[in-house]
Length: 125
Image (cartoon, rainbow, N blue to C red):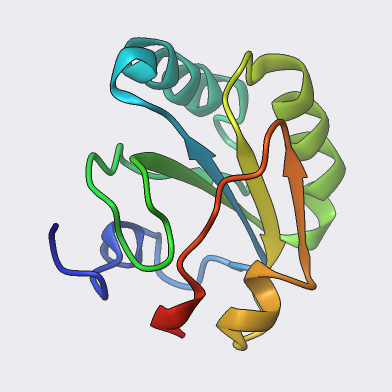
């Protein structure tokens, strides 16, 4: 179902953006409108800050088995972004993880979930 190694956000991040953390916001087809509204709200909320909200990714990609979008942010924005997601995510599941360069570690030991955990496909690492 699509190229499992393609990362939509890697082509859209501003040059030099400090990608220290990712938040993956997962949605089902029936939640797509809410997820898109949340994405637009994130863009508005964090406008002018060092927070990057990616495009909607409508297919499974990498270890992520469902559609999602990402919010990328540096360490100093961790509390702002995570607290905002806790309040605004509704029923959507969110994976927040550090970006150390070790994908398996990042998506397991360096990760936290908001809402129900989604079973990721770790075999891609």
